[in-house]
Length: 452
Image (cartoon, rainbow, N blue to C red; front, side, top):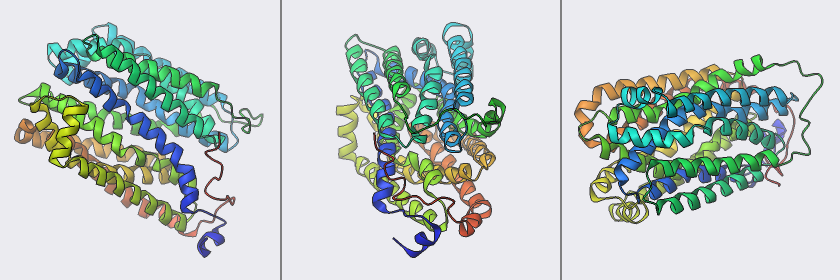
């Protein structure tokens, strides 16, 4: 224990950080395993290029619909930890999830689907048909996400992160079994949608049934309403919405290149694999919210996050070695030579994801912790604007490079957003951390947080 930690009333060690963070990192890793598993199953379809492209586009649209509900986990945990009632968060989550699922059903079963996929995204007839088939099974996902997120927040507030990881593990296992079982039928984009929805439904049921005996869910003196929750959540919802809109924007750009279908398919594979490797840094937002109480803990948690990001970036660089990436793309994803070449050229660029995504997540957590959620929303707007400008300037020059263009746009947008958040933190958050003492001492970085 260092002297600065003692003065701040904080005991936070490497082992303590690991105990708090490991179940959350495992959860992210299992969640992002979804995409490479589905990509590997879809690559074994009768027409893998069209199946991959169709599912990628449908899931990007579905992601835009369910992404705003992901913030409910943070809101529910923060509310319960501040002695607020759970029921307003639950009602807000369920209602919002139902509205977004209704929009998904309209896209799947009405002319709105043609407008979204053919007009806005710009896919061709074959990919359009596959995307609509997939959307017919994906539309319940927003509501299921809302329910899951609310109860995950309840579990985080009760310092019970193991049930979250366990439920996600079951979900990933069921998804893999369903996806590869359906792949024997010849499949298509719909099989990815069925597997994803079935797995999510089982995960949601498990977190709903997991108890939190040490958490008081309802408080008589609670004065906050759904309106208060919505105001606090709105910038975070915009942030996540724009995060999930980014792949859709990039898909729309790639759909307008000289060779769109292979570009979309290769980009889908690279994104699935790269974000799977990058996943462990995704929970740095929760680490900065829960563990950063002063300038010393800020330095420690940021340093641990940097080490984690370096390890993940090193793995991506290893998989970028030509012999290794060819083996992975051919044996795991069963890609044809054209797609192997397109995806292989983009993978080394994706090695920047762990550093840039980790930086984004960490500083967003600091702003949420300080109550400045508006900065998080502004950063997301700046990132998407940067991607759109870069796409407009580069699509004609780099359109033939397919997945390289897509990954390059992602890296550029993350760089711009990261620089903005880091600069704003220097002005608005870090000065407070230098003078702020911990309100309540805790030991070993939420010791027992991972107890079942």
